[in-house]
Image 1 (spheres, rainbow, N blue to C red):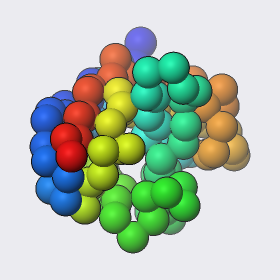
Image 2: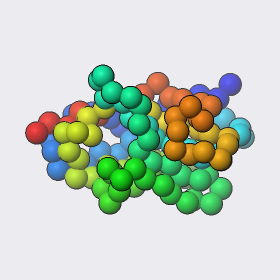
Image 3: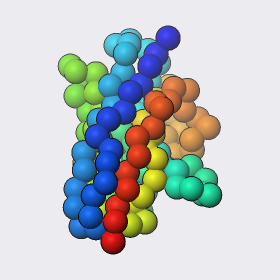
Image 4: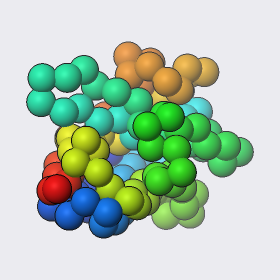
Length: 123
């Protein structure tokens, strides 16, 4: 069974930075993409960023492009989300997920999920 564990969330002032980490418990499982999603209270889960595991190609939501950076460390079996210039509207629970298919954008295409980490940005 694959487990994804996020860490690095917290409280930060607007304009600040946080780095989220996601550790995968299994080294070999079906994953074409690793992604980050977020969900704010009363809102749907939304795509934030994804990385194609084998090639390192990255994809971003327009709302975070230029501020967030997704990366991976194949040797450590980790994926990261560096978040800079944070805004109050970035406040949400952030989830790490793994996807063995070809659709990186929609949450229901992902097979494995972490438990989430809270990010709160104060104004």
